[in-house]
Amino acid sequence: MKVLIVGAGEVGYNLSLILSGHGHNVTIIEQSAVRGLKVDEEQDVRIVIGDGSSARVLEDAGVKQCDAFLALTNDDRSNILSCSLAKCMGASLTIARIHDETYSDTSLVNYQLHFGIDHLVNPEAICAVDLAKEIRNPGRVAVENFARGRIEVQQLVVAARSSLLDTPLKDLKLDSRVRVGYVQRGDVFEVASAETIFHEGDVVTLFGHPEVLFELRSKFDPSTSVKKLSVVLFGGSETAIALIRMLNNRRFNIRLIDIDAERCKRLAERFPAVNIIHGDGTSLRLLEEEQIGQSDYFVACTKHDEHNIMTCLQASKLGAKHVQLVINKADYEEMLDAMRDTLNIEMVVSPRRASAAHMERLVMAEEVSELAKLPDGGIRIIEVRISEKSLCANQTVRSLHLPKGGILAALLHKYDVKVPAAEDTILAGDRLVVIVQQSQEKALLKSLLG
Image (cartoon, rainbow, N blue to C red):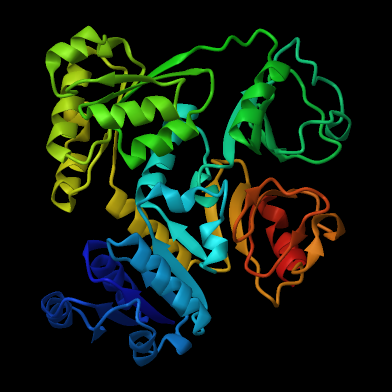
């Protein structure tokens, strides 16, 4: 595979190292001659010194024959322009690294669609997905990396007084944005079908929009009581903003502490349901006054790693049940991972590391890859990439003849993620999340791919 990377910063450097190590032909475009020389000395890749947003430089670098083009500089606008040009000039796959949430907001304009870019990767938003899935649904099977947090997986137990008992799944008329994946009855796992009937005590795994899944809880167990979780965010960063959006539900009581008065004012206007506290989150006195020790989750996500670390230690000492930490500097990552248990920090996430792993997955993904495997259940959750040659390309979901023991749980179009409906058309370039009994996997893949 021929890969073209713009920007030899930390992310670009490390991704180049990984991809070239897997035998791919990597070219890096870098404006800084000093940085380019360093990469040239340390890696077996081609270096082009120049501006990655220049069509002439892209042509000289061989963009027309490029299989994957990644713009990874620290300048969002430059990355977007580079990718848009690369797509226009013939690059097969384009990925732009962005930080400003403006470009992720599709309420007025879909920037990704407008500029013809295949993927916009926001490191802070990816971090927020990792943090949110632990808060929203701890300890569960999860495929949020597939759906960027827009498809959640939950496991619910069917109670004795459930209205869903003893009725075939086809007659339950569940929300179309929900898919029943599989049912566990004792030690037996079964992929759901139209004829599946729920019994008391069944553990049901569902895929769908987080809010729809939340509303469905009472149908499984009418006695379910909603426990409000207290979530405290330290820092009004892009990660915090993305996390607030993902926790937009009445079951979360969110407070945010930030030292910048102007930022606090903007956030308060933007998120009226969030309690914004103007103050120094590194102050033990403030943490005590705000009763941080009684919070369910404390998340330190400022841009200052030292502040994040020290405040997490304080929150843990005060008694916060779950403590999560965002680290921006590569130098701290390995040490903090090793000391996580000692420091009583439940989760450490890194925007740099998360975005690099995500982009590596986008570039190197195989036609079929495993997302999860159920222990002793004989069931796999897999991701299937659809190409122009795939049998199901340009077919509606209704027209597919999937074997019993296999269902489609999620569909990712280039610009949309959803639980697939019967009339949805599967297109080349789409990705499918499929739940399948291992004994039926070959038959299911044959019906999708041919």
